[in-house]
Image (cartoon, rainbow, N blue to C red; front, side, top):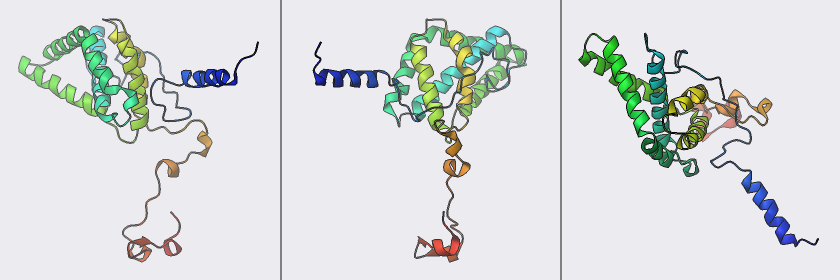
Length: 222
């Protein structure tokens, strides 16, 4: 059967763009950051450690860490609108408001239980929240963090109510791994520290400069 050429071109284009990821792809091949499921008892998974925490309290802490990470992503990742980090975060707050509320109340009870007084418990809860948020603030690993957070936020929207804790347990290690700088994995043998951290000119060496122009013949190539 004869098929017009323009139909073949359209079909090829549809296949090409249909296979593309829904959100931004910063690398030809991204690093594999996936890790095993966590309970929250593993070092670093909840940010600050939570001594004497029950499994329920650890799960609540993971949910709150997930919320904090996606909140940071909503603020830090707007440089790439196709990630939809802000819109998805706002949707998550609506879709999972009951579980988020329950998780916060569980953490509140935990800090009141392990603190000498209710007042000190509230202060410790506030400090915990601040440290969790600051733990997800990243500069050098912004691309991997934003890409990973966007993927998790997209999954969270389609997660059933009450199952956000399961998502946090499944992907928190991946989210933590994304805070470490990673580059292109398509040809990793071509990467080096100089590629990731470009050499800076010696600004303090006056002999290397003439009328604000770097003198390569005197101080070498950058």
